Image 1 (cartoon, rainbow, N blue to C red):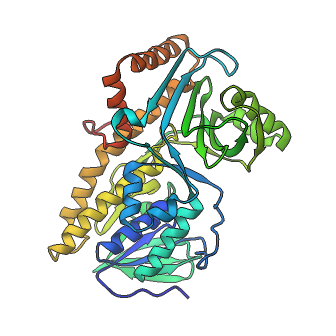
Image 2 (image 1 turned 135 degrees about the vertical axis):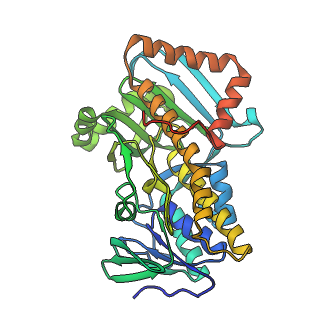
Image 3 (image 1 turned 60 degrees about the vertical axis):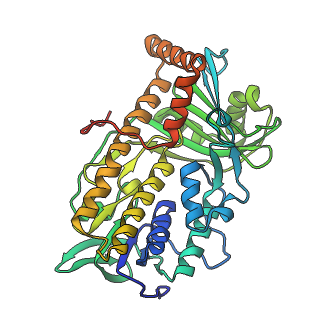
Length: 409
């Protein structure tokens, strides 16, 4: 049986129990809506650890501010690590000397830190607890099968039955059943690259500095964790990534240490690894009648620049703000004007970040001499021009806007 909700306002069905879906459900509950949340996975019992407890994600300042407003910021920040600086290094090969080396300090734009590297399991547990406090109705182990239109709303057919709701918010990932059921097209293109994620202990302290190596094949990014430990996102061409994923643990550790040693010293224990292909995607629309898309149901970005979940939480903040204003005026959250306002507010930023992250990912991975030269000169220019450097740092955090339509790179 689902966990029952209190009827405080119009019901919104949120589909997807990942970080974006949980944040959306909590934010919409705070905006005065009654929430029904569906997820294919079971919801952990109060106090029970989430299965993805060890995985981490770098959250920037605005995302952390949203979590504070949702009442989960302090809990999520526990056992997290501050990100005080970002160091970008251009390398012609893993063993070569840097061609450019620039460090972006949060203090240069008046911040103590850009954000924090947090545990996804803690974020999930804190968000579920907040939803339980808000009286949300939680449907675990309820994979969505389809969404059907009815006269006054939508019928969600899932693995344990069905649910009627006047509005649905899709946060069910890049293969979103909601998006496909509502016939919203998406543009995607395989990059030919795969991201490998793991964590490792190291001999030298990271001092809160995230190090991103720009090298042929893709970025190699070490992000601080509590203590002398860092998470790793390692991008390689698909064939190379498959070879690395097949290696025994000891051989994989040696491959990590060969690339890490000069930056963080000797590598100790290496955690479990996982890999996923990088396929940039953006939905052509973010809304349909009585429906809104957010998170990876709406867009999938490269992990370069830590834009993925941060962009998703920006979706959540905008949608919740619009819904809260509508509720204060006594208007329904599914009005066409509200949904169009959400799309107009978010689509330019999403497309801009997609273009920037994919362009950067392609430039980082390229070994063509003209591209490598441009990459190196660009980093050197940033290091030499403080005003430009500050503008880039602000751009990581603030919403972007480019003219529409912007084609998928």
